[in-house]
Image 1 (cartoon, rainbow, N blue to C red):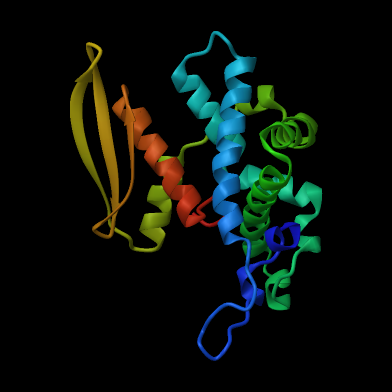
Image 2: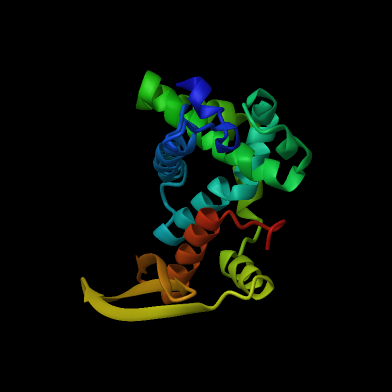
Length: 215
């Protein structure tokens, strides 16, 4: 399973029926992404007991964005351990994305092997506790909407929004859907329309693997 977490799709081979002969790390990456989000949300919830949802959401985005994941993966030396097509080893931009994805896959493997408690300890102590300064992250500014719009302009992609307001508990609840090239990509709900749009953009940036270097 750990070998699978560090196997990039570029090394996959297929038989005559176009079936994969070995499994890459994409499924584990999907699982690890969800576990990482949950652990970081819990850690922030416990560390900042008096902060509201908007602050916690913003901090979570700053911890798990693609740039941070690439940095953490580089500190662990994951790309040096991976099964990967040799040509990609010379592509430093691609390696950052590949490393971040491998880190999520590794988290998924740890979760399946050791369970939530051990995975939480790995993330909180080995990753965040050792390599990230949360107080410093609080002072940085990240705009996923700006990154997405810059990417869309460079790649000539049409970006649109659907917006609907409902009432929840006496407060307006904004439903925002992000549409790229006519396809509904992600949606979010928040009491702030601006925050809902930013959450959509954060999800889209992660899904499309957009960061400051690709936007």
